[in-house]
Amino acid sequence: MKIAILNGSPRKENTAAMADAFAEGAREAGHEVEILQVGKMKINGCLGCEYCHTKGEGKCVQKDDMEKVIPAYLDADMVVFATPIYYFDMTAQLAAAIQRVYCIGKPAKATKAAMLISSGSPGTGEGAIATYKNMLAFMGIEDAGVCALAGEENKSEEKLAEIRAWAKSL
Ligand SMILES: Cc1cc2nc3c(=O)[nH]c(=O)nc-3n(C[C@H](O)[C@H](O)[C@H](O)COP(=O)(O)O)c2cc1C
Image 1 (cartoon, protein in one colour):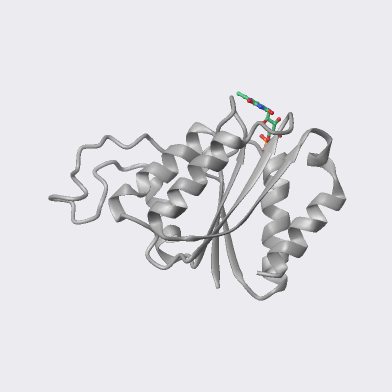
Image 2 (cartoon, rainbow, N blue to C red; image 1 turned 90 degrees about the horizontal axis):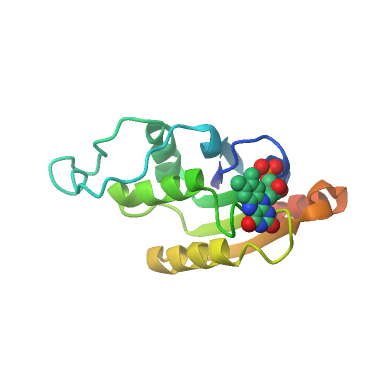
């Protein structure tokens, strides 16, 4: 299957290590994986202008890095949302990338999704997880699981190995 990992972190640190571990495990199982570091991209918020659903025929009126993300969304059998926790939520960059999918309705082929969360303290990702689960229910996509690492766990080789094994088992 084709897997698109959207990393909402602007840094290549803790969340990136989780995304890389997931990608390694999935690739070992023969899946094709693309990591998009949306946290470093220029992605504006949705304007709510409805151009996409009227004149635009599914195309967004805004020309920014979302043009790189939409093809990956459309092609993916599975989408993995990876994010650090910023003030009890996913990053604004990842939220923007998710909300801009409005122009295509939902990822056309995706049947599965997963979430990777990195935070400083444990138990701070509940808001991000709730958004993720609500979105999946709305889009009719199966939740393959959520992995949340906090504090020292972020540097744990054991935890990253668990992510590799999980991704390999998909
Ligand atoms: C702006 C900002 C807000 C943050 N808010 C939280 C928070 O609410 N709860 C928490 O546990 N950690 C918070 N953190 C810590 C990050 O979630 C944590 O350092 C994470 O591992 C960073 O991931 P990264 O290395 O992929 O950027 C915050 C960090 C930043 C920069």
